[in-house]
Length: 130
Image (cartoon, rainbow, N blue to C red; front, side):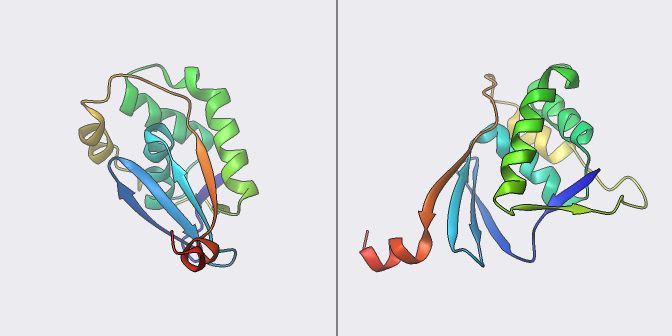
């Protein structure tokens, strides 16, 4: 099965090496740690499989892709539950480009499991004045 970022409903930006996402329908906002951001960049660029995400993390962290299997499964389940990713048809050709991610992560030595943090609704944050 292939997945891609729900770009019709989710806006995002990378801040200090970590992605910040906002879902347009729910106004929920999220933070991804550096590991999850590495996977997110793949999901934004093309429809990918869980195996593709494992290879992406392998490119970012220099470990065998199979070592990331359970972490990738958990991340995909979490992103899907929040409607941040959607199922997608398989791409016609090889559309992924790991070079940008490898370059961005060269100085990041430590691996931590990919994590998504939900911070609440953006509307409530704005209205609270924080």
